[in-house]
Length: 269
Ligand SMILES: Nc1ncnc2c1ncn2[C@@H]1O[C@H](COP(=O)(O)OP(=O)(O)OP(=O)(O)O)[C@@H](O)[C@H]1O
Ligand SMILES: [Mg+2]
Image: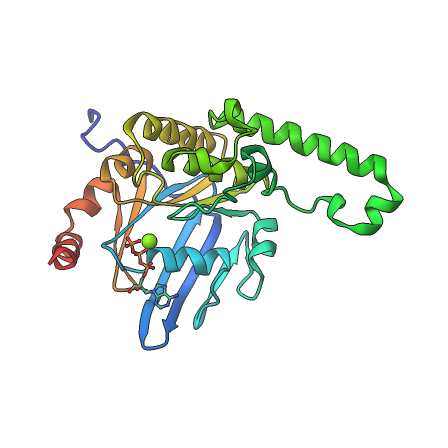
């Protein structure tokens, strides 16, 4: 009989259906190639870590998946559909939510309104719906507010709903972003360094919330330099360097991989 080993993720199966399927992506900026042949799959309900030294191309890969950048070549499939030409808004509708490495709340707007900004396809934004069905629009707005309040509660920001977002700490802004993207009920969320610059107490809250979301079936792709967090959360890790995949496996296996260690040492030098 085998006893539990030091690596608790070792025997977990990789799910079959890919929620996000990035295929051979290349992104060139004027003189430089930030992503140069990167493929990555995120399965239904999976939580995958994406690591790599500074400048490896991780955030650029997120921008390609979320649609804020168009690839030079390669394809992005979401839920079995090619979304490579879709706008960021269409990709949110397809089930992708992403947070930014440096959160970008509307600083003068209230915390509640920032969360509400994540709501998709409100009829109140359509002139005719407002005119023809004002009751329906009011009902929708009420439901959106209730949902935003529930999400603020989920991310422990409910006491701050009428404060302007500028009063929030860096960690609270990350939680605000999380609540904002959850308004659209994403199937998969891309988190870009949720632990960076966050105090330990708030970091614990962020990790717990991420674990809860994943427990409810949300697929998560997590860029993070904090390997303790990656090891705790992710069953599978993909390491990239110079825009390409470098290694893939359990957190323990990838962090012990000589090519990964070499890439980080090279980055530090
Ligand atoms: N809009 C842009 N124009 C030109 N070069 C860019 C642009 N965005 C990113 N780059 C370059 O692409 C490379 C990859 O950057 P990226 O931000 O994707 O790295 P990263 O892996 O997220 O790094 P970090 O861990 O520091 O956040 C870097 O050399 C960066 O300077
Ligand atoms: Mg980055």
